[in-house]
Image 1 (cartoon, rainbow, N blue to C red):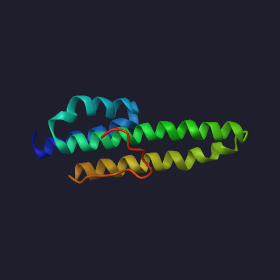
Image 2: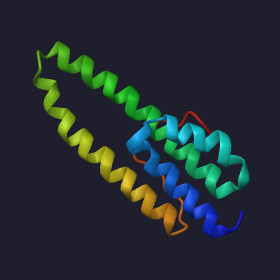
Image 3: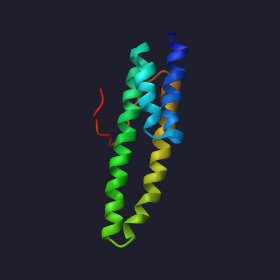
Image 4: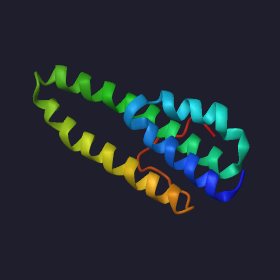
Length: 109
């Protein structure tokens, strides 16, 4: 795969999280990840981020239930950070740079 295609696929894998959640990066990791180290690294990073978001969302939901709704105010900055980090990762992938999401639990390598 040429570098231009690798950058395109890496960008699409990051952006697929907006529509498909963790399924998009998972499909990218399994299908396109073997075609190049750049794509594989970005697919693993995006998949780790999406899984971490699920874990953090569950924890935030539990906090919201325990605090009788007051924890729900944290969903707003959490959602904004989620969108901003995904856009930054997609831009980095499109420019041919590697990106590491902050506060991500690394489960897939």
